[in-house]
Image (cartoon, rainbow, N blue to C red):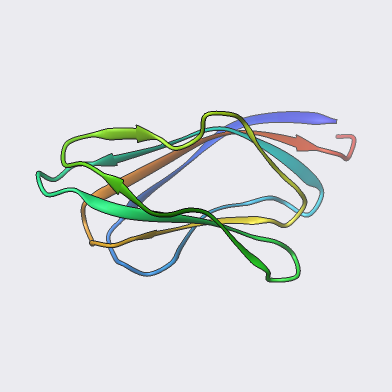
Amino acid sequence: MANIYKNEKKDLTTTDITTLYTVPSNSRAIVKSILVCDDSNNGSTITLTLTDPSSNVFVLFDVKTIAGHATEQLLTEPLILQESEILKVTAADANRLHVVASILEINREDR
């Protein structure tokens, strides 16, 4: 088993649903933190969802307010993700939010 420490970063330049991270089909993942920063003076909101392999969508944060020029830590505890699950983010306003997720990916195959 290989442990891969990584981060996934997105500059939310649109209000479209954006994939932040997809767990590989041969791995599990532990998300340690999800930081969201609003680099404008206006503030915005973000929605974070988890999509399972059957395309069921689970809302983790629904229209969470992020103040202007502020950074919020969304997670207070680690989030466990299973094979092929997808974290997606949606910003209410374009060009205001940056998102960084810190992840430990655990590959179940020997390398």
